[in-house]
Image (tube, rainbow, N blue to C red; front, side):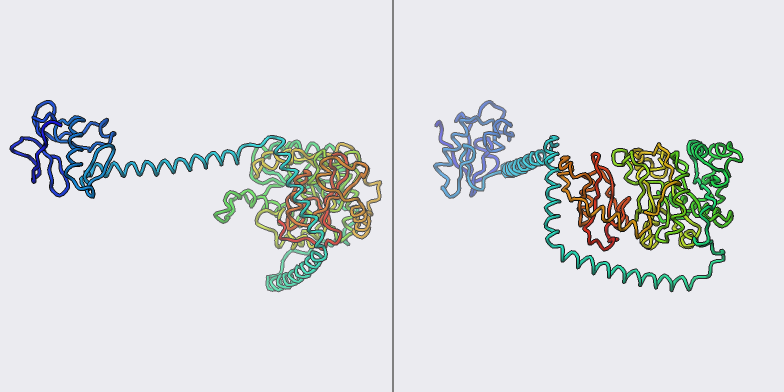
Length: 557
């Protein structure tokens, strides 16, 4: 081993040897003499950081002098011989006295611990990412088909289970209906109380329906703003209008758009052009600023309808918007159904629109078919002056068409609507920025065949007769499951019925069959007594509640 290292009880420089000392526990110092060959080279015994490649072998981070691996062998031998076992440990191949680690050694150990910890974290994160990828990867078309079938199967299994609890549901419906009637009575009492405290209206009451002649003039009120394409709407109205005297056209313009005003003025005395005088912005709640357009539309409707009924003294009006194109028998339809509206107080409007009027969902071979609907359709509709007398005092500040669908306005009344729409919208531009048009409106079929409605008996649409015949037809149809209908099974059955009992089952079945699935105060679009009639792959389908249905649930929205 060469010269035996000497011991010294001090620290720092050993003046006799002229070299640095390695620290040992309990103040023991190991002196390394140049003469022993432990130190290589010259230049004295200066403190030198250990090169990186040696640190990785586990050597202490600092040495005193230019030590070689053989120097460390001697150092280990000394520790083995002179340091008690309780005060030493082996570290990376080097025998190290306990407590003799430098701060750099401790830092290195902490770094290794952190490295292990980060390794564990990365391992867990990697596995989580793999699991997320596998969970969310796109399914194949066959997987999607199986998923759809499974969802439908689960929904229909739920239907079967709910059917077993029919008696319980019947009681729930009955008590719910009683509760709703009680709330409606209280609300009506409160409304009457508030109305009685309000100042009386200065406007003279408008004629009741019993005072209106079946041959009354039916003006067409065109609601216009800034669409110069109003020309397309007016051209069709003028082309199909059978009589200027029976069907005068009044264009009410908002927005002050000059180009649109010039287009309207170009028709001369073929039409009447009136302009909404108030073009100012409307103060709206902060969260409704983006709906400013809907507030202006409601204000315009109120002003325009008041002009028609109070200033011009008309007893009824057909309302269309400037982006609607009308069918060849548009005027024929309203002229024929008008006496029916006068005779049946359970009706409050006539509409030219079918909300489920996509081409593949209507029977174009029978455009004469008409229905009652509890859903207010709009988009080409006729109202009487007495209805405006009722609505004007409480007309909403915005979203007037949804407001019309509230139970407080509808009051259990229905509208007449056609199988095939007599209007079609071509206006993508508007306050809804075209989303609803692109998703739905542009697919509605416009009737292209003239139907002589005035030569037909429409009395079957009166409530009592319609209720009898329509409900018998619906609930006399065999019931079919959605998956059977989608699979085009049981074609021999002809007309069929698909039954729903909950809001969620209605929405699931409606989506599966292509019917509009939204509900307004519980009423489905184009629905009557909860029943939606449409074509699916060429056969008539009724999406219907159970036969003991007791009324709409306003919470279904």
